[in-house]
Length: 168
Image 1 (cartoon, rainbow, N blue to C red):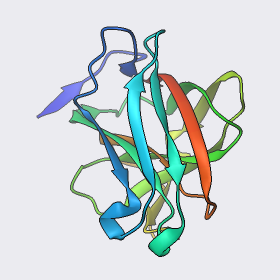
Image 2 (cartoon, rainbow, N blue to C red):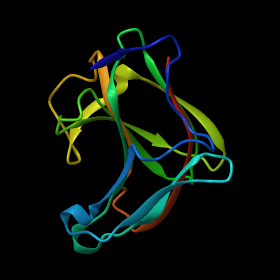
Image 3 (spheres, rainbow, N blue to C red):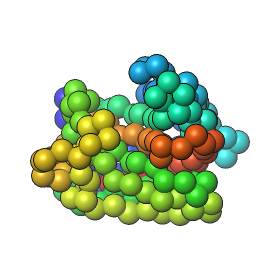
Image 4 (cartoon, rainbow, N blue to C red):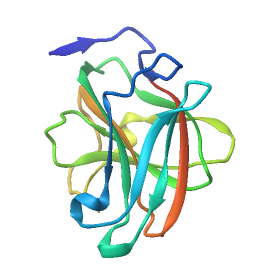
């Protein structure tokens, strides 16, 4: 099933009534690592993705993933993310199909204040397991998954507060 969208479609706008059942945390424990993380709503209704990245056992990442019905994005050019970071670098990832092994990735450097980050869809590059693929940048007509990943090859605590993700 593919959903058609109106202008300025909101993929997610967190609030106190938001359920997180479509959001999934994936840590490097799937590969033997020891990173830990969780997602919850804060008192303002924003999603809080926080945890600790560990480099033990060749680990080093935590990911927050959201899958949804395939969205027709043929009329959209950018993704706008409203968030408050911790000064660390994250990857924002999109997939045209949840079954793709690779993701299209754009790196975002967060600030410790609320900010709105706009990314042109064509700026997303294809990456698989940390390596850029020899494929064109994102030029798909659908999105079925978004995710946030921290994996800076550092042992570090992190906290990312997310308000919304909108297509424009």
